[in-house]
Length: 259
Length: 264
Image (cartoon, rainbow over all chains, first blue to last red):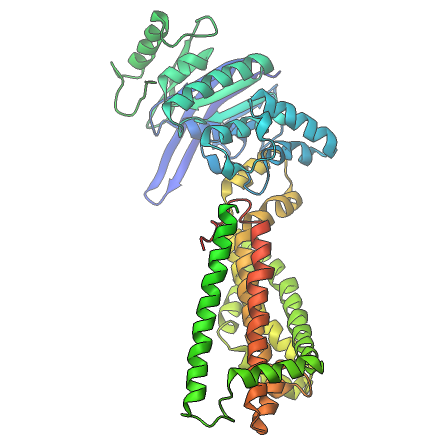
């Protein structure tokens, strides 16, 4: 398990209207096996930052180090889960999707299918190994995506609002499932969301970002015992605290609470 | 019967009704005496002629010659069209070079090239195969090019994050991701090929071929032979469109949910 250092990362976007600052001088560190949520309103650069950590974007200045080694591009030390259900390959079954990373690594067919089956069991989809993505619900597709990102055993899991497009009930189930998966695998997780309740439910630590330009506003440790109860008084208290830091007293326009 | 089978049966029945209606209309005109019987033979006569040509094997020889030319030319078109379409979509310089050529050459009907090709290659298989190749290549190339450009970038990102190199990306993501377009290109290409071959055979083939037999029969006022050959051309085209390409589509892009099923 590897620590991640993010040092003075800055990135500007070229748009038809000129340069727009995406993120500016962002620095923080993530401990091995830590679950970190990055929270902030639209335009705060949280997804941009995740894309830089994933190696999809190059920062204009600053650097990301994973276990001391600078990130120069995509790498199999990181697994990525996107928000869009369409991230799965429609021409592959659930099993085929989950085996993809291992196939790229050159793992023999029998072994990679065994591992893929185990990963699908972890996300409770062992009955759907032979299903194509279009036969699965949105929640199931996202579970396949999580299994796929875990299958080749990366140390870090990067998740970009993976449950944002799901209905509220399914989202609750998925959060519970992800908390279980994390407890079992102890991956380092960086999870981007604009949902405060989600962050309080999942995170060891929450990084709050503010927009224009995207900067880290503050970091909040969530010391609640796991498994967490979203209906408990302390849980609601933490939710309020976080919303307060985000500059919204009781859930503003672009911030969401679960419910 | 499953709902799918019921639906399939219904669509077959509807097809049969449509064809029967057309046949009845034709037969009505043929019997009406508006045209001389020898120029507009009845279905009975056409059927008898067709049966005779099947029985003596000549129709198989004609259809075989045409199919050989079409499949040869179509295979050449696939070998050139698919890789070139992919290269154009992946590499800007390739696109810059070939796109103007494609845009300029695509609208030229392949039939317009037949006399030219005859001067260069004479009468026979070389000319007809090349005309088919010309007609089929552009739809295949054009659709492949569009298909590769419309591959979901998220698939490329996801595959890249999972360690896929350029070679693996090509075979495991781009080709299947572009497959709905590639199959459409094959369908359109085959249709163009089938149209081109009959035209080319009329003037650039000798002794064998469905196009040639129609052209030859005209000189002897054998309208029944012409109609029988036209029927065979239609049937073979239909079989390829519905049975061959239809099954390819059902086994791939339809099964993967990348194109919606046609409700019959």
